[in-house]
Image (cartoon, rainbow, N blue to C red; front, side, top):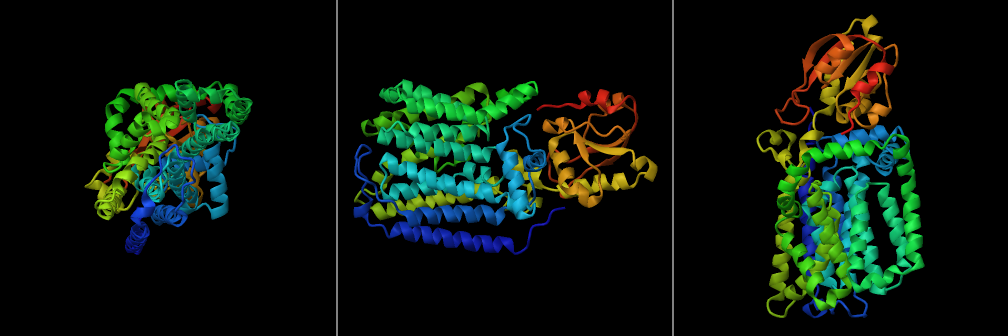
Length: 535
């Protein structure tokens, strides 16, 4: 069982109080006279409260880092660590960037849990800075920019996504940077920004294919407005070619392996109606009750206010990207990167209301307080601030699946090792380890060598490509695999253990069955295709 370090929580609370006090003091010292924002179409440069923005970004980074060592790896992180040891131009279910980040992080930080979460924590800081920068380009003054930074830092969706090294982390960052670059393009009307936009979208395509929805939505937004004039540029062609060149390696890998991502997409579509049923409530829950009026105001202001007319292509793009995921049955968080722009836009009208001469200080303090309280209320759902055992009585994993999926992996590996060591030496020398999903395989790949376990194999996603087991392995310790499949491929199948995480928390591994399968009927070259599971 994973244990929480005893002294971490008080220190975290102290840091959080200090950061909140410093933030309130920074905002409070700004006089009402300097808070008045110019219209969005003004060409005068906006003052940038760099200290306040970087303070908020640093506080967000420290918050993520403070809880990064609690519980354990999520199953996707274990998978990406394994994928990082099999570097390739592509994988069954995602492009190459996240496994590469996992590999570099593990090499530089001694393969530690906190080490691989340094980049995600920096990702949250990047979202804070990018959102504040967009708000400045949209016309926000000092207060608006600080509010935009605070909005990104207290958004539950971003806090949760930037806690883990998954494909969502770089996806959100690249969406935010792409939106920032497009905003810069619309402000400057300089078509050379297309080159940077294309490069950013190209790198994003190596993180997650999801960026294609934003690019297509931006194209629709430009075509639907007078910004279409910016499309007639050789720099757009150059940007497109750069993006295509960066996307080609993954596309070639997919083509060479029979487009396995299509099988993954089909598997994801089995959840489409559930995703649609929860989609809109999730947009409110994930961003937070306090921030929902802000991003809605940003959408309305950008869409209807004449001063924001030039930014309407991005408003259309964000609305389309969010709506398309609903129509397609995508998971509610797929379009989360769009909220960086909408929050930034919402801070322009919010600033003007908050800094009106009457009771400006009181309104501002209330707004800051509400945002901080909203962010704090979402923390137990977004990141592991509660003891892991609390998930038994307060099943927050029903909202954030990853909370429960990050506990007790070493305990499970230890149980598998017990069954392996209990075998007679002769049988043990011919026994491999099989798992039903990539989380179990990744856990054994990460912790198994310390328990003396052999190389693990699985039919799940890219693990299937790294098989089959060696020809000498005629028996297997099989974790969470359909016994019917095992009986078709082995002469004898016996249940030897059932896994329990020890704290009664309900998750996908609780009650996982472990079998001993002996007497491989054919050979692994013939048997291995039956184990493939692209999902």
